Length: 239
Image (cartoon, rainbow, N blue to C red; front, side):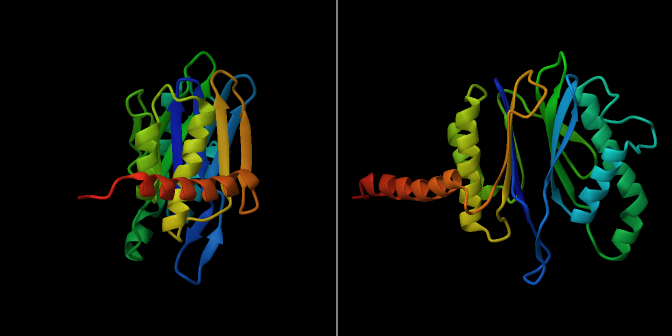
């Protein structure tokens, strides 16, 4: 399993993903779920994936090589919406190639993606792309998406995140969301990939990999647990 969260805010974008894959207790591995697509001073995109690893890797390879049958790719589209269409088409291309063999083997076609970024002269945008290749876009009212094991990390996002949340606070909130997930589900695991994108920069403002030795994430893990217990203990007991 995996957990990825992407946020589209007034000042930019935040992306956070774990790196664990789990095909059973004897087959746990580490694979990066975050991919970057950048063309200097023109466009910057980030893609995070959950689902069947072979399928998501096949989709990424088509995108990296620009191998869509219709000739479109992430480098020649004119809008982020059209880039999301390209990714949806890549998913459909993999499905057309592989679905019969997958069905014969009893394997579901499972591919869920968070995709976001900015093309020059356009605002930052964020999309949730499904296994069918269709997608939805984040709005100021619904400004974040989760894929994978999302339920443990959702409450803090719902309580804290708004479209106007500053990037540094949104980053902290995303990391607490991830810590809550790590604490409750062993199928999500370190290290983490974190990317922060400031609006109109067309480059990553922060790109870091965090493992168990990262002092900031250690601090979040310790303090969040302590503060939750303190808040719980401060609430009056029912009469």
